[in-house]
Structure formats: structure tokens, C-alpha cells
Image 1 (cartoon, rainbow, N blue to C red):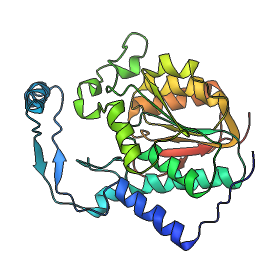
Image 2 (cartoon, rainbow, N blue to C red):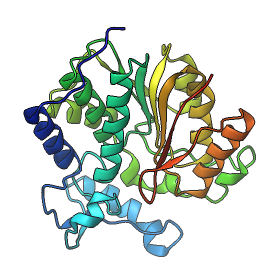
Image 3 (cartoon, rainbow, N blue to C red):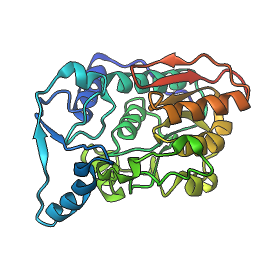
Image 4 (tube, one colour):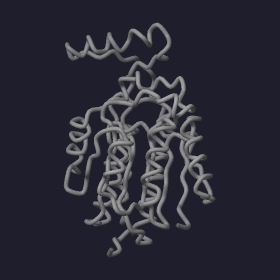
Amino acid sequence: MRKAPVQLDEGTTRYITLLKKSLTRSIFEDVYRPLVYHPESLKGRLYPYLKQFLARFRVEMVKREPFDPKVREVGKDWPAAAETMIGLKRMDNIQECVLSVLKNNVPGDFIETGVWRGGAVIFMRALLDVCKDKRRIVWAADSFAGLPKPDEKKYGADKGDKLHQETTLAVSLEEVKMNFAKYGYLDEQVRFLKGWFKDTLPNAPIKKLALIRLDGDMYESTMDALTVLYPKLSVGGYVIVDDWCLPACKRAVEDYRKAHHITDKIMKVDWASVYWQRSAK
């Protein structure tokens, strides 16, 4: 694979910075947030039905909350309209990893497992564009229907998980494609894998990967992705774990690394996320 130029000039750097701020809505002082309730509370049990009812009239309930740029920077709030909720620090991490694999000619495509509204993978595609890499594919893997119900018998770490009840996490494939189109990146270098990871990833036509970004929240989703994708990761490639802050996800990563004798240093991105670079097969 021919090396792509990765020395970004001032104009390109300004564009990338603006794109990150737009995808995270860090550049806009939005004061509305989606309503999020604990699934086991009375409000949490009733809200999905109310939300579904209001959707018939194109009405959505939100709450007013002061915009805090420091909170948005580290992805600690839940933007109402942004294409990603991961914040600027985790976007910077994606940029660092992408430019590293391009600079060092690490072979393979990019993938995110769990894309929500698509912001992180849109950004990956944009980086390929500005670096004039025409060969790599960005894969967006998601159910596009929210998270699965926990398989508590097989994956005890997911016992009691209620994320499958959070309707805000269910973003349709059509909406994600529209978000790609808004930024001009819905093209042949983007592929979508719709369905549960256990069903889609084993049969996906992916030969090699240079970047794996895990954002599946649960033990099952994280383990399913690592089991299939990590053997395809090239030496010098990166694994980013968005949900290291969640005990079930962290345990899945630790279990996989221990079982496969992975000792590469885990590096912190922010309060929620970590990453490491593969040093050996």
C-alpha cells in the first residue's frame, strides 16, 4: 500500500479542528439535552412509551442545561444533536491513531463497533480524505437498533444491564447514512455492517485492520468484537476502547488480553477511554 501524505498544512489542520468541533457540537452552545432516566425508576419505565407516543407528532421532550465546554471536551454530557457524544479528547485520539498508521504505512482498514449517530467514523473517513488515502475502507458496525438484551447465562458480567432499554441509543442506519451525506462522506470507502456483532463480524469481508474502535458498552459486545477483529489487526495498529469506564466492558478487554497474552501498554485517553498499539502477532 502506497504511503499517504500525513503532514497536514495549516488550512487542513484548521478544517480538521473545525470538523471535530462540529461533530461534537463543541462550537455551538446548545442548551438542550435528551432526557435520560434510570431504567428501573418509575420515570425510566414510563418514558419510552411517552417518547414513542410523542414521536407520532414529531415532538420530543428535552431539558435545558447550561452548556459547559469543559464537560463537552471530555464527553461527559449527552448532546441533543451532535453526531458523536465522545468529546474532543477522544476525537483527538482517533486523529492521533489514524495519522500514526498512515505515516507508518500500517496495512488495514478502520472499524468502529457501535457507531451511534456516526460521528467517529465520519471523522475517520474525513482523515482518509485529507490524507488522500483512496484505498482503505471505514467500517461502521452497529445493530442500528440499540443494544442487545444481556445474555446473563453466557455472560455473567452483563447481568442486570439495562442499556437495551435506552431508546436514545437506537439510531437507524438511514439516519447515520444521512449524517455521512451531510458532511460529504457517504461514498464507496464507507461500509455498513447492520446487526448484532456476533452475526455480522464473523462474515464481514475484512482482511486486515489498522484501527479498531470498540464502543459496544457491554461484555458480550466487546468480547464478540475483539474475538473476531483483533486477529486481523496489523502490527503497529491500534485498539481504542471507548467504554473502559464501564466494568463489564473493561472486564471483557482484560479477559481477552489475558487469554491471548497481550501485554502491550494500555494508555489513558480520558476518564472513559483507553487505547493500545499492537506490538506483536
